[in-house]
Length: 116
Image 1: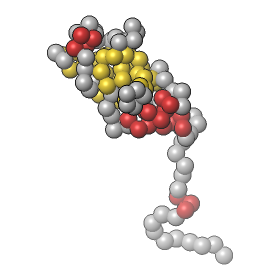
Image 2 (image 1 turned 90 degrees about the vertical axis):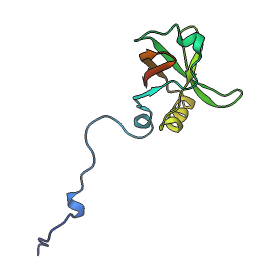
Image 3 (image 1 turned 180 degrees about the horizontal axis):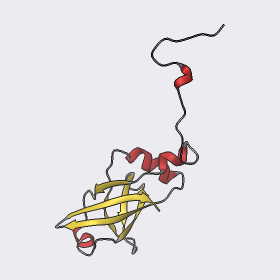
C-alpha cells in the first residue's frame, strides 16, 4: 500500500540548506557588516583615509566594549552593531576582525567589519 496524495508539505519536502562549509560557531563569526564608528576620536579620525584598515578589538577595562584601532594602536572609535553580542563572543573565542574605512565625512567614519 502506498500512501498518497494530498496537498501541502510533508516531512519528505524538507531539505537541509546546502552550500558553504561547516556550520555552527564559525558561521556565526563570519560577520561582514557596514556600520559607522561610534564616539569617534577626532584626533585619530582626522588622520584616517578611505581604504585604511582598522583592527577590531575587545577592551575589558574599564568596561567591556568593542573598538576599532589603527595600526599604531590608537582607538578610532567604538563599534555598535546588531551583531555586537556575536562579535564579542567571537573575539573572546580568538576570532579576529578588521574594518576597512569606506568613507570619512567630517567626524563620521563609515566602515565595513569583516573577518581578518
